[in-house]
Length: 431
Ligand code: GDP
Ligand code: IMO
Ligand code: MG
Image (cartoon, rainbow, N blue to C red; front, side):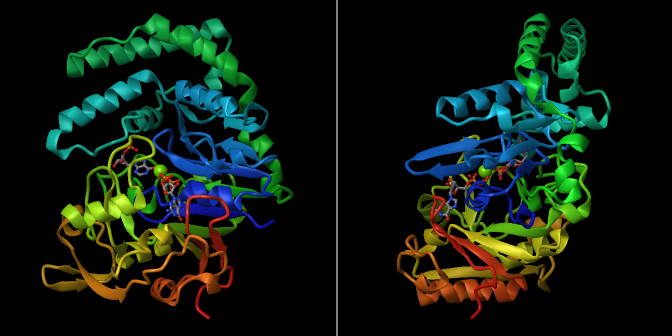
């Protein structure tokens, strides 16, 4: 089986979980490599909906091994809860979950700092998920943070080190924010209990991923968040704290570039964003609300209403270029089924000048106005289509237009939430 790397092409929530699950059958490994429980990947199996935050979406496919890479920040409390929740719904998890010992450990004080930093920013808040992501990466980069491997220390030592870290965090909470201290002893004891639960799953990536490195085992890499939320290439500072673009799959696993296989971007047939920051094609008021209702656009992690707007070719071409995408999957095509007319941004207008490249400077991306192309809708249902020729002509035209404008083959189309609502188009959609 050919390896594949799936990357969010927009601002997250493109339907990566659904696509990973739909394509996941037969892979030896599904590998997460960056981010943490800020991700919310939804997988609909029959009538039941599951949202995974830390555990890879491969967990719903029998026999697939799931790996949490060293580039992640892992909240052991959240991970334990997620394992228990999946087990309660009849899924086996522990015997095929591997957690890199080099992943950063996300502690309760990181969540507290996340909240306090956001409050401090007031009007300029990022609108984080509140999962402690930024502060955990901050400790990693300062080289002061705990790691998953520390959970394998002798328990007394682990407890002692955990108390030291929590007390240090308490000093900062008090001096920076005049905030209440966290109960160090209680949390350290909880961590010791969690360590005993998680220890059997802690792995050395260089050893367990040997088969992937040597090409005898196949892997599907599961990106979290999306290209425009990347710490370096996104709409900084309105981004997350990890590399959601292709480089993250390398540094976040320690695997060499040849292992990544095809680099496939996942894009919605329109656009959404949750949290603050620039969004040139955003639709406001009733228009935006209409799309939100059609698409059920509420955050899988925080339940927040997502901002909605038209497909943005300027931003999408940027994602194609930055990641070197050689395939694209378009999701949620069915959401547009009832619309009489559709718009797509082909360029931006910035102070009277036409821009075709995404402006990375914040002030420019905030001021850029979309230049739209109008396309007719198809006003027919697409949810039952299983091959390209089942789609209404108007929907095929829309996809052909996107494929041509992106210059990359559309290799898959998702037309609903369930696994089978997927059209595979390995040779593209242009006939
Ligand atoms: P992710 O973070 O990229 O995995 O995406 P989310 O799970 O946060 O959000 C995607 C939402 O769209 C979820 O509720 C999915 O069940 C749903 N979804 C995914 N693909 C499709 C599709 O093709 N059609 C429709 N109607 N819903 C979809
Ligand atoms: P998936 O993997 C959509 C957004 C937050 C906020 C910014 C920073 O489900 O696509 P953070 O908590 O990471 O410090 O928040 O990034 N964000 C996401 N938006 N989907 C996600 O993940 C996201 N993860 C973070 O809303 O704007
Ligand atoms: Mg999501």
